[in-house]
Structure formats: C-alpha cells, structure tokens
Image 1 (cartoon, rainbow, N blue to C red):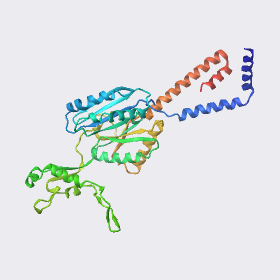
Image 2: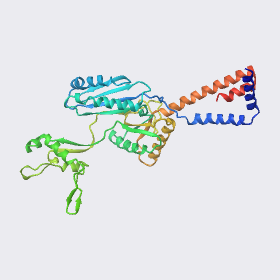
Image 3: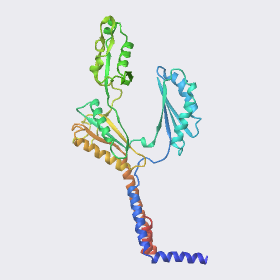
Image 4: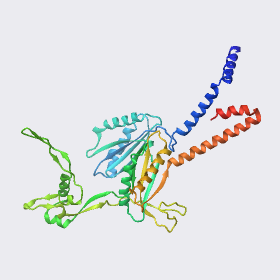
Length: 391
C-alpha cells in the first residue's frame, strides 16, 4: 500500500510540475471541440434494423386468389428464417407485398441473403401464372431528411412534375446526398385511344394493335451478319419516341392496303391519366416563396414534392443546407420558373441541429452549476479542474 501510495504521489507530482500537462489539457479541449463540431447530426438513430420487402406479381388473379395461393404460404416460409421478428403483408388484385422485419442488430447482408435463399427454395411450390417477384432491402437511411414542395397557381401538376424531375437530376451532384425522387404529379405518356367503329370496319382487334405497337417499340441488336469479308451489325429499332411515330406504325396490310395506328385510334402525347392528386395550402402565418401571405382567402395550389435522403453516417444538417443552396442556384439559373414556389415541408437537418444545440446548452448550464457549487465548497482551484475535465 505504501509503494502504491508513493507511486500515485509521484505521478501526481509529475503532472503538477510538468509543462506537458497544460498542453495535454488544451489538446483534449481541442479534441472535444472538434468532436462536437464534426459528429454527424441526425434525426434518425443509426441503429441496424434490417427490413426486406418481397414484391410479388400475379397478373390476372383476384386479391383472394393471391392471398390464398401466394401470400399466406410465403408468410409461413419467411417466418422460418432465423432472426425474423415480424412479417407484414399487403395483398390486392394481381400483386402482393410481404415485408420482413428482423431483430435489431442482425447483419443486413445476411438477412437479405437468407431471404433470397428461402424464396429460391420455394420456387417449386409457386402456383402457375405467377410472373415473378422482386426482393428489395429497406434501410433507415432511405428515409428522406428533406422534402421540398413545388407549387404554382399558373401551372398544373404535369408541368410541375417535369420541372421537379429536372431539379432531381441536378441534386444528384450534391455531396453526401443519396436517393432523391419526386412524389405526385403526372408523368408524360403517349396514350392510344381506340376508335371501336374504325377497328370493327377494318376487322382489327385491340390485341392486333397491341402486338403491332409492341413489335415496333423495340431496340435490340439482332446481328451481326457476315457477308464476304465484311461483318454487318444489324439493329432493330429504335423505340417509338413521340406521337407521330406511334401514329405511323403499320397494324395491317390486308388487301394490299396499309392500315396505320392513326386510322384506328387517336394518339395523345401529354400527361398520363391522374391516379393521385397533390395540393398544398397555407395558413395565416405561412411564409410564401413568392411574397404572398397565407390565409383562408389564398386558394390551394397544385404541387409535387421532391424527397431527398442522405448517405449513411453523414451530417443531416450539412446535406440539407447544401440541397437548399443548390435549389437556390437552380432558381437563379432559370431552371425553376419565377411563378413556381418552393416550400420546405420537412427538414430533419434543421430539427436535428436544434436538438443538438439544445442538448449542448443543457450541458453548459449543468457544468456552470457544478462549477459554482464547487467554488462555494472547495474553492476556485478545484472548480477549475472540473470545468476543464467535463468538456
């Protein structure tokens, strides 16, 4: 005990008399400051919860048939996988989705591999008519940290969708950004509206029209063809690009007369049929991007939303800031018209920054309180040691 006490005394004396102690104190303070500033600030906790979606395609089957023939059997098989905690499913006509949630901490790659192996062993039991399935892993980093609503009182959701698609292409260059996509709005679509009377008069069925369009809308290499000392590459295509090319597809040549798609249908190049509607409104205290106040007198406007996720382990605050800055640059460059408002509807980076700053403030208050108590009880020297040690 005496030797141990003398050793401790010598260590304490060495630190008290050495100038290296001061440098060590400042080095640890600097390391703490760097750690505080560089540690990623995130809203979602970085925990490993492997999830896998199995999307099944069973065209022509009703929801009841898909459930009885596929979903129920697949749920039973997937529950046999080691580490599966919960299995959820959703079934509707022609398709189903079975979701697996594994125990927290399970290896993500092992979970995906085991799921695919189990499904592969189920192949001999699938019912006839099942077109196939897709196994898709789900990660917590796929959750968007930032959503931006594009709205306008002068443009419809089709135009807004095209603007948002262009913006998403430019957001791919933002450092540490991950999956970005557009929600809402109608995509461009070339629609063929059949004329039943014209088709009946020419003896052509809708199936004949579908086959003609499918055969014309291909792009593949079918060569090469060797002729003499030459090799000729033969390609079929290209794919149909606009309404005029669709109209000029030959459907039939019966009786020596060509029948085109334009003779049997009306071809429309424009927005797809609406499946969902997305609109945005503002309350009285809303800040508008185009200098208009909110309130009950301001009508709702058509909108689409851009969702942006980040890479694993990166700072949500910095990624969200860079994305918003890039959108501002795109507006200045004219990629976003002046009559289109951009509203931040979710910013996990901002909320994460507020929570971290609030936590840092509480820590500072706690340190000051402890230091004051120690000054009153033990003096300022002891309080200084605590004030340096805690940070």
